[in-house]
Image (cartoon, rainbow, N blue to C red):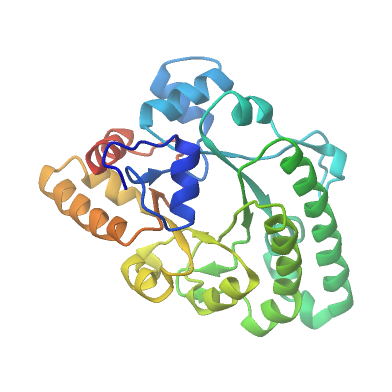
Length: 302
């Protein structure tokens, strides 16, 4: 690669997902709470301009759009009730790579039916579970069509299927009921040339080979506190997956210490050397995050 070559954020992320050489490490956050933007910019209102200013100030290459529902009184929304604020501005007026985050059936079920009720549903009523997954899949397919038409760059399918020590549910149930639906959704998106990432908190390492077989091109949330060591995952799966995340709240706090920051940057650069790494927090940016430390990390990796 020409040493003088520089890329737009959109192309930098695309090349990173393909595990190609880039001019610098790509950076992105899964979500950015408006309260963080207000505090950083000392403003009362947060809209497109304020979010873009914040993203540029942090040197981020990615902005993730989350849906807003015009009407949602529990259960699944209707396709027409889903709104993606300012999506046309993000896709046409910026060089940022824009992901849209869409909840999978597992995530929606846990949220709308309650953890215990939903986790026991496969044993109580497999037919009800199958019908629910089908409805969630149909909704997502309609969302994908709308998102692609509006120029989205990537999709994140989000399902928090794990906790700190492992999966929340028997992997056989995931493979029998949930993963076939995810595979159809990924096939639909990938057929349009759009990369698809999978997000889950916790330790979901056991099913990473299944996620690869489904067709996911990347994973978000690589939390070493949950046994997800990014160097190990990179060695085992780095030729097939782009890994996004790695930083936790403690990293941002301790980055104020020059010695800790230096050690962290050295480790991040070693990871980046293998290609296919997007640096970011595992949690996204919420009120209370140490932005001073995070900005120090982001400045230093460049």
